[in-house]
Image (cartoon, rainbow, N blue to C red):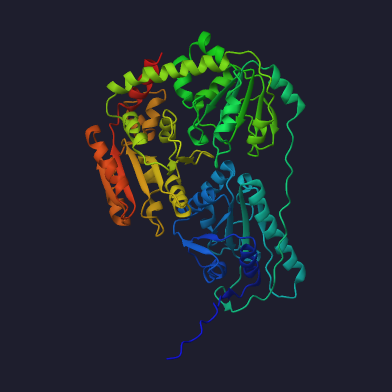
Length: 567
């Protein structure tokens, strides 16, 4: 029997010329991952991407979830991921993820299909004003010209330039861009070969700046230098760099949980250090630095921000390519060199100082003392987190939800083998689960997501996803409401507080898990936690969710008493 020769793969392309341009240029630029929100007006691009096996296409129905999934993928891959939607309100549902990408500096490309310009504002359905809709939170926003003929060379060249600029901006400036693309019917026609060719416009390389002499002089003279390491993904320091930085006795290094820094001379519990003495001016004033250096993204700790504003930080520099914020109202400059290079070029003639030793000793004393508090701490959110972090397996990607989850995590030293992420750009609760799932879809490591109940239920459509890896794990801390609001000043036992602030509820994740095929178990007491946690991490027959029920009314007291105990 004669074997037939294998036929070459035949890709279909959209008939619409400017849709061909997008597909061809994305392929040339290596943008492989496309998250598609199903619709009709975006059919030309859906056809172009899904009919070509160069692209990895994912269909996510809920637009808000889809954009956060793309965000999570881009976060892990460190490269642009595109998210594609139809016209109208779909585009607006991408906005939370766009703002997160903007402030977290993650390359996200939004492709929105649109009606032709002459059909906007004439009363047709799903015709909103899409161009410039993200104006305050976008690095680049453009609209392509409609190509009705291959002879329109000027418009072809214009679109080529606009698409290339969008891609280059997302890559070089690390953030979101928006390409709005008007399409006229018919939308579904296909052709076997593209009708045009495309040209890549290369990315301009930015040269690194040098460390200014004025900074070097300030560094040499400062007796108390405070270095704060915030969101650093991927990590920028190795142990040798940290050894150099902490060898200077006048340098105190503080790290946040998302900095992915673990070192024996780095204070990882900022709130544990500050909270017990924050109202004791005679004690905490000695922590005041002469010079503050920030490296990384947004700072989680409200206490360190309030402290440095309260005592009027003298001089603040930001180091690295990430955006510089005047967080303490004393930003003197942005040193745009790689943090590793910055460390290696610091002066080696150290000034005599006990700044580092004093506060490291202070911190270590707190760590010893807190063991007595842990021993008598009742079952609560804090006690649950005390059990959770040591129980996590090695070498995972750890995704942390916002609000209370990330703040509790700040009170524990992270496992050095973990890589920690959290949506700390806008710090909202929306999209945390979707982002974690997107990260799991793009990562070759196991992803574990820890979140609170309100954040989880708010983003429950995240589970409406056919691409969740079997080894994905979710831990939901369910305290029946927004427990973090109980920590804030106010009358907590009123109907107003419980309804409009705490948002008390009796929801559980069990039915959501059943509907979406996620394996479910729950635990509501300390004695049963170890067994439940072991089952969570040993079973990989589909995604797993562990719901941890904690008391609603004591969590604030347990946490605040912790800080009082350390005094």
